[in-house]
Image (cartoon, rainbow, N blue to C red; front, side, top):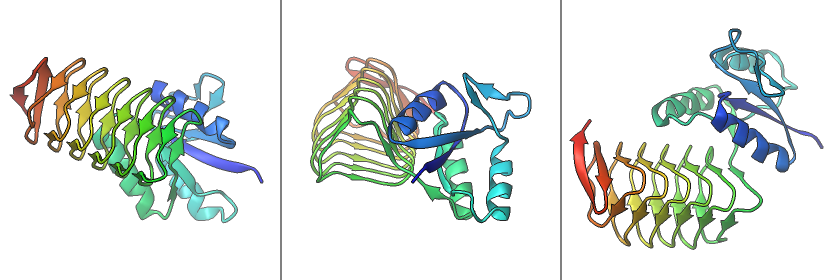
Length: 212
């Protein structure tokens, strides 16, 4: 049976998610709030805005209600996911065929796991997260909702990353470290001490450089 999937967000991030979805057998349809100014992303047409998708779902009983939000900004991704859930959409979890996922790991709805990522035993990943290309989430890690773990990040065992945080490309986090909510860890950082909520940290070793 053909599987249809709506993708909300037509950007570079959306292209990669569409690629994953098609490898998993979905037929994708894009929706983006830039429509009608923006009508295509590569060869994929954009069919309307997120509001158009909701209206279509409410009037067409035969339309699939499977959806994934392909927006890199954590705050906006959260807003769209909550709106779609409120309108009874089925939030899909996508896992690239080359990702390695322990059967003892738990991944919540709306998360996308990119190629060559690893999520090991008893790790927990929340709603609407991005586990990007070749990221490693080791055993017993906890990734809270709407957080982005960027490409080539390595989280050692027992690391906790709070909600709506961003761990930048190629960063490394020592075992049992806690990174708070709404944090940004700059690219290439080495985190060896806990990081509080609502800050940006950067460097090797990482230090807090500003609050937000």
